[in-house]
Amino acid sequence: MNSTAERPPLAERLNDPQTSESLHRLLDRAESLDQILQTVGEIPHLIAIATDFFDAVSRKASEEGIDLERRATQVAALLVKVTEPANMRSMERLAARLPKLEDGSAVLEELPNLLATVMDVFDEWANNLKSEGIDLEQSVRQGLHAALYLGGQIQEDELDRIGFLVKSEVLDEHSVATVGMAGSALSSCHRGSCEHPVPERVGLFGLLSAIRDPNTQRALSFGLQFAKCFGGELDREHVNPSSNQTPSS
Image (cartoon, rainbow, N blue to C red; front, side, top):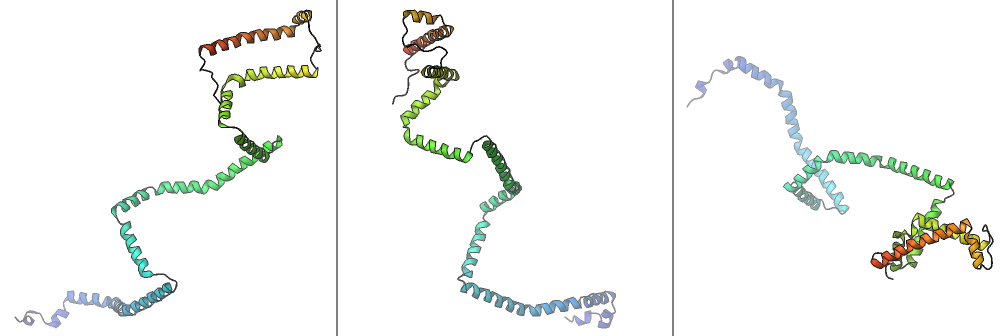
């Protein structure tokens, strides 16, 4: 087959507008093609430079005891592990929570200011206590000393009895007030500062005379009322002896 006979003459092809347009586009890109060819020609030199740089880095790492090949293997293994489906899903969930982590970081940034505010409040409270005559540091030290001392002196069964005492009505405000009044009366009698002097002896007529005193009558009335209440407690204890039983030592 003679393909040359089927083609139009070269002059005719060169005069064809489409051919002329194609030649113009080719000439317009000649400069770009020349730059590409120059770059391709420089590729072996660039590869040689990169190889020399990598060799230098490898030698320096080897001198510092770094095995680049081993680390590259570890990085490849880590990349394979990271790209496992389960790990990818975990990272996706973590990425979804990044906004919340940002809010948490903002709180952490404000933490020093919050601590400073708390310290200012604590200092003001300590200064108020100091103005009232309370040394906070000494009080804490003595309180810890007292707690440690009592902890070493009191046994477990004694703690149980103290707990029973606290839960009972012995420490009720009315009971404490009554005991306080009794203590004041005993102290006044002992010091001789009572309203009436304490006689050395009191006979029957002295007792009858004392009963006419209003204070003595109030005391006797209180004693009789106490006797009734205490009798009721004894009766209740007799009916249910296990209800108010003290812990055994």
